[in-house]
Image (tube, rainbow, N blue to C red; front, side, top):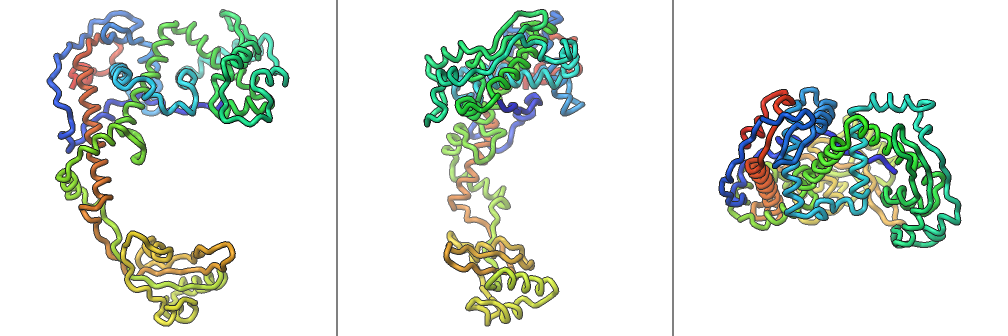
Length: 467
């Protein structure tokens, strides 16, 4: 199974900074009754209570240390503020959108539980790596192999009973209930945790932790793959066992929840067009874009006209050569200071050779031929490298050298479809950010928050001011 990558830096509340110019789309919110943030919590293992539910001090410490790996200026207070804000936002997102919508992107990747296991494992290793290494060194032989009581590769007959014949063509790589039960009965590895219980890892345990590629590897009987994955899973089990013993079950469960909520907030942000590629679909942005008025598009165009600059026309010359050798020879002559028009008259095979390869003014139109596209892509006053023209499989391709003598820039028409689309998307993205900012502020204002002041390393301005 491939290692899952993620951005370990906690989500900063700065991501939700209000972007100006989109107030028209904010819902009419009545100022909510503001619950008071208190600093009376005096439970050493807790950093805060949010509406009565605990936030473990271990989670804050771990996320703070994780943030400091990226930025030494990160504060423990910011880590706590992020955890509290994410907890409220994630709960609201689950209620409003449902977990299926928040986790839609994981349908073809790893399962939700496996993703969280990997995030938890990566976080613990990043922050407590030295202590974990010491824990491994304390095992007999200094390796986790000492935990393994028995291990074995399943034989072909057992795999056939679960997956069917390896040469069978399949439309999908999913086990039915009967196959799952058979996979559960095939033990790949038995282990004994230090000061812990004995356990085993079945073929089903390995199967359900795979993405599509991993399941294909199992179904195609990739040698050693199943047992290798079982051993990797044992390493994950050991890390979580170590953390439970050192920090406690409640602390580890809360850290897992923090990582889960962080992912859910990222998904919520992406639904609002934040952090996603500008070409990525955002249902919230798309809906808001439909509400953009022509007057708003016109105002955006006036304010951001430079975004719509384009090349209106170019004045160009070209030299067409029969083969690459001839093209390189002419290119060398041009690089040595040769006159473009003179060399075009002498060497070009095009019909306009007599005029020095003069293409005249080429205007920006909806559909440009290949040579015109090449001219529009070429900087003014710079001779292009020899480029092979597209040709059919049985046609002889020519080579082109282009010189753009002049280039005239202009702007897309304000009433054009491209302007409408770009402007409405930009306005909608700003509005979506404002909506999410307003939601966050409302949730913080309405929440009952009690903070353990002893954990703070600077004032908790976000939680105290809630604005």
